[in-house]
Length: 386
Image (cartoon, rainbow, N blue to C red; front, side):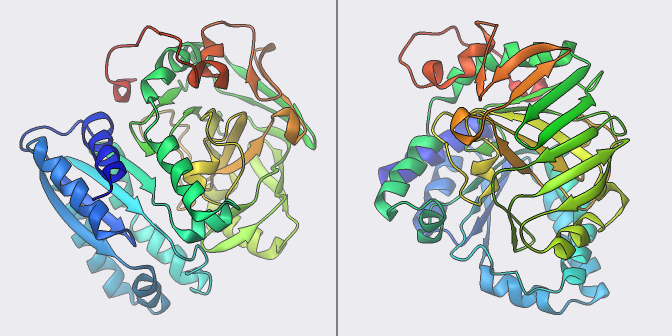
């Protein structure tokens, strides 16, 4: 057993899901080594929890999605919802040898599956203590353009970092966002304006995603105006897109282009009415993650980035009421080495060229503090209550 597996499983059980005696936890494993599943089961049992395991294989899943019948979808969704409703906690370990495995699944099949399984996702997000993470594979190392061994070290450094160091800065940034109404974002190809009044901000420091490092909210649904140019590649429903550019009027995406297939981009955004509105706005600040690797759980946490998400808002938290089967986190990096940019809250400069400014507490989310050994005062309490 690789000791790094045991360290990660311990963090997920104790810090992320806070498992306790009698908790029922679903371990949803997608193409990951059996050893990691075993480490997760043992870590859960050490906390007095009862683990259930589901093993998934990407090629089998693709085959199942190639031909679906309404009766099959309805029964599957019913059974999955019943199982999720029986759980107190949920962890997804998601490996992928080929991120484009489902690229030839008919889009109508994919959309139907996403739509009918939305109640399962909503229950998991709203009713369980959940955490989701990727698993390091050779394919991910290729995406990151790193040797396999170096990527594995990077992965475990990121995933097992001291996430408690993020808490003081997240608390301060949350306070700034909670008090703000107007957000202005400028940068190369970007001139964007919207309101976040009354929606509140949610800090994410290792409770829900691993890796983590973001504070998110949502724009008032019809308030978004301007243009946004994303400078990282993105993969959605098995399709790759680059240089996505969105134009907004009264909150709605009125024009969408990219350097690839505009028709496919717009087909996703036409999945339903809510897909052309924004469900999330978030600051990313994980100090270990610097470049995009076409994996959203990593890319949305890139140091000096923000993401602006067409589609579904998180129900019940920072909820602007937008509903959609789509939730597409697209990322823009604003560090100086990626062209720079500024974010202002009610006219006050909060972040410039990817670094937080003008507030010593918020500046604790910059790499200089998060990667240092400087002592800090932890913020007590359960962040999932925020």
